[in-house]
Length: 114
Length: 115
Image (tube, rainbow over all chains, first blue to last red):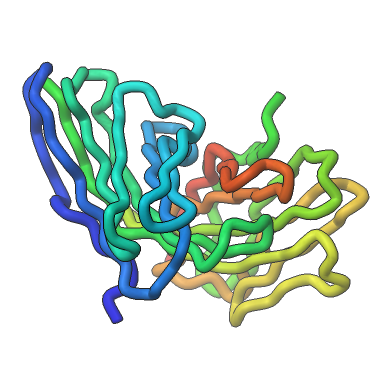
């Protein structure tokens, strides 16, 4: 049981390049999330998914797209990377989306955009 | 207005002593959950403890306990018998029933445990 895994762990992009971050969970969770963490700040929600084939915008969705074609995978895409997207990206999953539901996080992806 | 406030950017504690990390929150939703996460220098987010708004008793998980004072809207994390491995960043977070699926995080408190 690996929990939540993220690929890759590190990535450096040039401005304008595109990339996809992969999140996978083996806990059969319905809900999945993408967050970004910037220095001195807590996590901010980018997009989330309440089930296979569904996605929704979070707090800071601009510049990102997501897809959830399979229940266990949640992909985060950057179509044209910008330096402002330099951050650490965390994926999380939870059984359900209620106020009492615990989210479990992946190890993070450190992205640098030059 | 900030929904989660952690007023201590950094804290020091002597090994084997207890330490309290402060967290206050703001919500008008009667149903919400409060969480604490630990982020060591390796970067992963580790779930520590959860408190539901309707829970009558304070949550405890091993050396971690949550001092929940609902009327004061505070959810302080207490770590007993601090260990060197407790040195990390600690985040308080909240999910509201009416907030959809968004978890709101505080800015965090960095804890340093001294030998």
